[in-house]
Image (cartoon, rainbow, N blue to C red; front, side, top):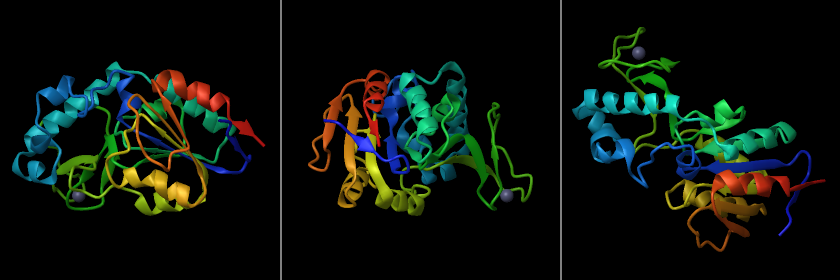
Amino acid sequence: MKFSIGRNDTVFILTGAGISAESGLSTFRDSGGLWDRYRIEDVATPEAFQKNPELVWEFYSKRRKELKDVSPNRAHLSLANFQKKHPKTYLITQNVDNLHERAGSTNVIHMHGSLTRIRCTGCNYFEEHLEDIEGIPKCKECGNILRPDVVWFGEIPYFLNQIYELLSKTKLFIGIGTSGQVYPAAAFVSIAKSFKAKTVFINKERIYNEDIDLFIEGNASIEVEKFLSEIEVL
Ligand SMILES: [Zn+2]
């Protein structure tokens, strides 16, 4: 199946855990690594942070440290390359790592927040933070405790208005390394389809959804570059 887009068409690319896993980052779904030593309900919910902020900070400090041991893979690099040729390509990622940015991508929308940002629980203060954090950091502005700027289970993803607007405009939707099971992201492909976008998924496990025009079963680090190189630009 051949795909073509116009030079000024919007392209919406949703990325998930699979693309990061191929760089060696552990994700809670396939478990292993850090996720084997912590329970999700102890470290990735607002209730967990209220109960034991030290433990939550310990977990996120370790995850931030893991970023230093991994690099963007061919899928991240091909996406960044594609964006240079098609600036109206938006990367909506469910990942909290910074691999898209380190590959050189722009227009990265972190719907689940970012490991490299921390924010205040009392005011609007936030900062980019790559260094290690010991204990529980406090806000310079108001003195309240800071938290990782990630969306926990039970919280609402960021940028949903912008995401829905992009979905209504996109001509081509590509889901990469995401099983498309978790809402609201699970509905994105059907929303794009309802606005007449062509839809593609590239994932290791097959997904059954009648709104997907083309499903490519395989590794993102191999299939993404191949697929993007075959898109015809009108
Ligand atoms: Zn504050």
